[in-house]
Image (cartoon, rainbow, N blue to C red; front, side):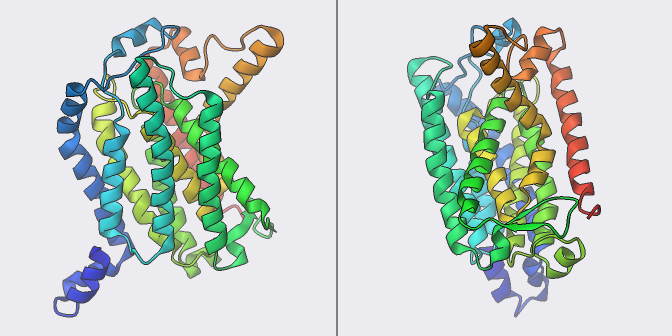
Amino acid sequence: MFYFLGDQIAQHYSIFGLFKYLTFRMILATLTALSISIFFGPFFIEKLKDYQIKQNVRRDGPQSHLTKEGTPTMGGVLILFSILISTLLWSDLGSRFSWICLFSIALFAMIGFYDDFSKLKRRSSEGLTAKQKIFFQFIAASIVALLIYNTAATNEELFFIIPFFKEVQIDMGAFFILFSCFVIVGTSNAVNLSDGLDGLAIVPIIMISAAFIGLTYIAGNINFSEYLAVPYVRTVGEVCIFCGAIVGAGLGFLWFNSYPAEIFMGDIGSLGLGAALGTVAVLVRQELLLFIMGGVLVLETISVILQVASFKLRGKRVFKMAPIHHHFELKGWPEPKVIVRFWIMTAILVLVALATLKVR
């Protein structure tokens, strides 16, 4: 909104010409989302308490988690509200990419909302079954993937890119749709599985989104994209506004979600934010970089797959408990130590992924 207003007002007051600069709007989008989430956070938490929207804790989990019983959940509503308002205020709404990102996060947030609502209704930690959740996620991801595929301006927007090999660009054709579905659904579930400790999921989301600010800006700039040998996608730079909003909203949420947490994001937040990261990766053709940056999220997912497969095939568990952050808790690591060490691992992996931009 301010992008168009700034264009009109700048004809009379030149200082408003700043609104035309992508970096300036990205900073303001980050600060706007941060301000909204921090300002409305206390009010939102009190309302959740009033309506008895509280966390139901797994009885088979670490005993220390029983103290989390009754903590307000569905805090993802606050995150998504902050992202939505900030993106609408500061994005160039003429760019299709901004709308695709908002559409994706909204679709998966609705699935998360239904899952959270089911848990509250049953007064249980179990909501949708795994099969139901995957089914709805693939429907949502298919819609998003088809939207990206059908609105692509050039074939390059559908290429598969491999880091380290700048000459390797594979035209996936219609297979792009299926591949994108797996990326978006996989990332959504990975974030969901990682959201088991205070602040554990939101900080990796913030770090990866911050990296995507740079990646989307580069992909949308013809000079930078050519220099760093990444696909040029016209106007995709606007997505850095969306990513900045995620960073700001995430930091604001972390203010209340840091140990000991006053609020949890719930599935409405984890599924929506995970899908948002997957969608951004697909738009800028950097799915493999997302895989590297989200190494901790991948580790969490693999630990669950291994645990389930091992128990079904051998009747034995690989870990004390899955996802793997619970394994370390049961080994005696204090919760804050598990959280911070996973943050450190994510920071390292994000730096490694960004370093690949020069190793091409």
